[in-house]
Structures are given as C-alpha cells and as structure tokens.
Image (tube, rainbow, N blue to C red):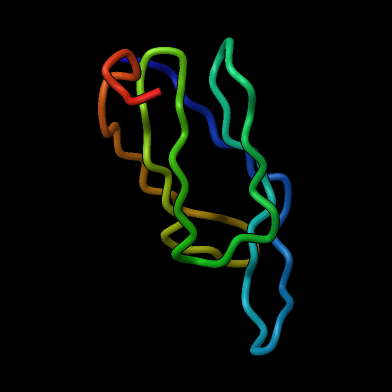
Length: 81
C-alpha cells in the first residue's frame, strides 16, 4: 500500500461567518504535492500517489488541529489516465 502525508501549515479563523480554514499540503514520496488553500470542513480532493489513488476529506478543524479522513479508492495502476 502506498504512503501519503498531510502537512497542516496553519489554520486561519476568518470568513463570514467566521470559521476555521485549513492551509497545508498533501503529498507522497516521488509525486507532486497538492496544496490545500484555506479549505473549509467538507473539502475533498482525490490524490494520486505513486501506487494508489486516495480521497482526502477535511472532517473537522479548530484552532490547533485538523482532522482528515483518507480513503484508498483504488490501486493507481488501474486508475483511468
């Protein structure tokens, strides 16, 4: 199974209404990283790692932490190109 990392660089408290918005990076060894730019709870993206395809969803955020759900959706070698 492939490796995946999520780096949370900051959490901004902003917007109307005010809410916690996550800034960070999703990545894996040997592939380009994907930027998370002030994402709200519910944000979801697909990430293609070296050997696997993942869905990454932001489940919760507060002042100091963010919680993600990562689901391996399929082996990347069988993913459509």
